[in-house]
Each structure stands twice: as C-alpha cells, then as structure tokens.
Length: 293
Length: 294
Image (cartoon, rainbow over all chains, first blue to last red; front, top):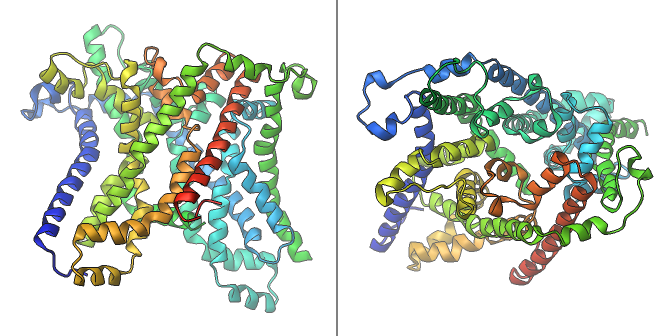
C-alpha cells in the first residue's frame, strides 16, 4: 500500500502527525498534571514550574485519603456493586439472549419487540423511582444492582454472538441425545467466554463510574459507592470528617483539601487504569460486536 | 416441546424484570395527567388532564430551559460529531501498527474516567486559583470564572465532552476504514490521485453509511442529554445556561417532591425526542439515497 508519496502528500502527512500529536497532548497533559499534583504541595507546579526540588514531593494527600473511612468504605462498596452488577448483567443477558438466538422458538419475534420497545420508550425518572420505592428497595443494594442489569442492548449483543456460533455443533449434540440444558451448559457457555467477558467488563466499568442511581436511591452513607464519596469531595467541596485535623489555619486547610482532591482522582481511577491496557482489545471487540446490529 | 419449555424458562427472569422496571414505570407515567398523591396511589388519584403540561408551558422559565436543552445538545452535536471522524481519518494515515495502537491507547483513556472525576477535574483546573487561570492571568491580568459564569457553561461542557469521548467514538470509524479495499487506494494512486483526493473520494464515502446511522442516533437523542454531567457542573451561579430539562425534572421531582408535574415535564421531553428522531431520519434518508435508520 505504501506506494509513492508526492511532495504534497508528504506535507499532508507531516501536518497530520503534528495535529495528532497536539490531540494526544491535549488528552495526556491534564492527566499527567493531576498525577503530578497529587504528589506535590498545592500550587507548587504553578508557582515553581519545573524548578521542583525533591523536598516538594509529598504523600500527604494519599495518607489523608487512605486514612479516611468514608473513602475506603466507598471503594469496597464500589467493588461489590460493580462485581454484583456485572454478574447480574451477564446472567440476565445470556439467559435471555440464548433462546432468542434459537431460530425455531415460537413467539421469538414478539418477545424481541417486547424488549426493543423499552429502548425507545421509558417511564422516566419519577415513575421509575416510585416503582423502586413501592418495592421497598430504597436504601438497599438491590436498587443499584437490579434495575439496570437488564438491558436490551446487552441482549442484542449476546444474541448476535450466539447466532454466529456454528449450528452444526448443536445439531450433532442434539442427535447424540444431549438435552437442551446440557447443550447450553456444556457447549454454548464454554464457547461464549469472549462475549461473557465483554459484557462483564462493560457492566463493571459502567457501574464503577456511575453515581446517579446511588444518589437518588441511597440515603445511608454506609452504602455509598466511591463515586458518591468523590462527588462530595470534588464537587461539593466537603472535606470528609477526620481528613483534616481540627484547628488548622484556614489557608492550610484550603491547600490540603486541594491536594486531597488530586489524590482522590488518582486513587479512584487507579483500578481501571491498571486494568485498561490489558483489556483494551476486549473493549474494542465489544464496540464492534455492538455495531453489527 | 420440552425443549421449548426450558428456553421459555430461560427468558422468564428477564421478562419479569423488564415488566417491573420498564413497563410498570411506563404505565406509571400516567400520573403526568393526574393529581398524584402517594397516599391514593396511581389509580386512586384524580385526573387533571393536561394541567401539568400547561403549567410547565406557561411557567416563566420554560423558554430558557427548553432553549438551554436544545442549544447544549445541538452545539454539542455540531461540534462533537465530526471530531471522531476526523480523528479516525488522521489515525488511518499513521504508519506502524504498534505506534498507532499506542496513540489509540492514549486517546481512548478519558472514556474510562468517571463523570464525577471529569467534573471534579474541571473544577480544580478552571477555578480562579487553578492552572488554567494561572495562564489566563498572565495574559489578561484577571482570572475568568469558568465554572460560575453562565457564559462559559456550554463551552466547558462541550469541550470537556469532546475531550472525554472523541477517541472512543472514533473506534467504529477506524474499523470501517480498515475494511476499505487497499486496491482502491492503489488504483487511485496509479491514476495520480493525491492523498487528499483519496481521503475525499475513497475514505469519506466508505464512512458515509456509519456516519448516517450514528448521526440519526445522536440527533434523535438531542433532548435527552444526561443529567449526570450537567447536574455535576451546575453551580448556583451558572443556572441561567446550565438548567436543562433533565436537571429540572430531577429538582422538581425528587428534591421538591412534585412527582406529577415532574413526570409531565419528562414526558414532554420524550415526545419531542421521538419527533426529532423521525424528522432527522427522514432528512438523512433524503440526503443519503434512501438509507436511514428504518
């Protein structure tokens, strides 16, 4: 494909690399700045520029965050919610999608339409809230895990995958006398690891990053996921009790709370950032499978 | 028959959950036409017809909220939609698979940062004492109140949105470009087509069908921008531009407890959305040789 580039083409290529470089920098700089700031006393970067000496580095922000019980609890709550949500999502999507992928299932079309309608029409915020409330699910983990775990999009994703599996395999197993259950558990599920992985990964990340459901359905701070704790630190500027000792000067307090913000951003994003390079291709795969239909 | 019986059993949990969490709320939205009191329940509350809708349409902030919603999404769409396409075309010119993968790894990354963190970063960067204002002050002498001045809300919202999602949204275009037959490019090069010409006559047409579908979907959701980020970025001072229907529904419904009125506003929003989807699909169909979403 690399034939000959004319002079004009070379100029275009060079411009392309420059623009791409600028874009990459625009993405990278804020992230690098946050990470650096989390290790420095506030404003050091602004006031001293690159003339930072070794005495400027500090782990105080992290120490404050890690000694904060709300933050720690939020972290473990978030892990629990995300894992449980991922499990529920995979369970419901796979069990709903498999029958819909079987060609001769009677009523398949109507059931599909039944699911698809929810993609275009919804009850809206308040009616959904009222249902959760009437079910007595307010202030319980169920409100976070159950309602969102059933999604048409995921069902379509899994269905498309199942339809791509070789049918001869099932027919052969069926002739050999395998029951529907053993076909599903012994043949379909083992072949479906990629899609299960993609669904679980998407659900986990989605839940890890969400705060809105927790904000409307949960009252008890003990149940708050990390994002909700973060929101109070980052957006509402509420320094959590115990993070800053009582009689500190106002200016000191402001400085420290800035620092805590940067450390909180890094810590909360850490799990995903560590996972991310390993899982990138699965995320891409998910987008691609999703775009087929 | 036994076989089917098991398959229906497989479907049962999802059907039950869909009924409970999707269909019951759909039914529940009739409280938009009622004088809802939680004690009397949905059925027991008396009908009031379009009273709540009229109240919203004649309320003094109706026009502002509607225009804020429309402007925020329309500008977001116009400015944000082309960026992933341009990015994909640019990535397509990069030689060296490993180098390209590394660039992609970086530009996808912000997609995995939560909205809370992105909004938090905006607040620390753009505060009067933040890094951005440190630069602004050196040039103009005084800081800009990005997060509290209504004049900057849309710009900050849309640009940060592009920062967060453009890379990730480019995946689908990158994949489409990877499927373009290389022989087309070879043949065009032999015929003396420049790189620019090939981008416009081979790459862009290849992207057209994907662009059409994604544009319809994005435009159809024009009224339904999420509460999540707008709500986080809202400050007491920037509400003249940051109050959109979604945040208003949340405030009226869950903070003030006016369930029926809030539901009516939400319903109003969804109805406009459906009409927009149909309208945009018709227009795109005309422009795109009869190819639309449906």
